[in-house]
Length: 243
Image (cartoon, rainbow, N blue to C red):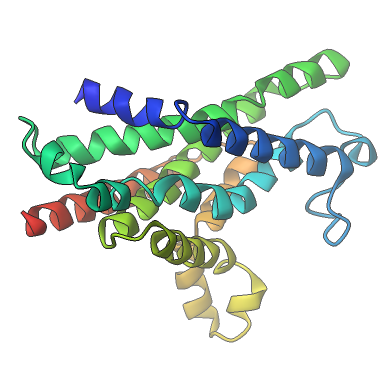
């Protein structure tokens, strides 16, 4: 299991694509953090205009980044193994299906987590410039990493259902987009208040709101942990059915 985890994680760094993808994601996040997004300045203000020693607007960008980034990361997890024929070879290892799923999930999750943690120099710089609240900042990092795990686990399930990476990317993209916008007015305006609250509850962005305010809520932590567990269980079931 440890070997499979190292193999999965190293795959993202053994090719130039992994580095180019990471640099591109970080570059655009930093640009939008300092320049802001003019269409929605209230949610994503420019750092200098906000006049606040906080990386909150940077972390608020991550849900949007995950919609594009995570499908690109997760689309190959199982689809590539199937297409190259190595899934059968991996299945012969003395590992249970749950071990295979957890090892691959941790590899992808750590890769995305490293991209999140790569913004720490930004937080340290702001800390030197002003009075950064490290408690709320660490809550933002915790929420971002948990939400990344929810998106990665979803992408793994989709990847396990197809041989084509591009198909896995497109399906995961739309699922991730829905999990983000289902908490917003664009969806809830057509629903009754009760249905809107129910659908909004199963939105990743809804549970990230508490973290974005710098709070660590056990209920939101439990939501992400439970969601990840459900997706990994579904992934294990898919592998067992194929065997």
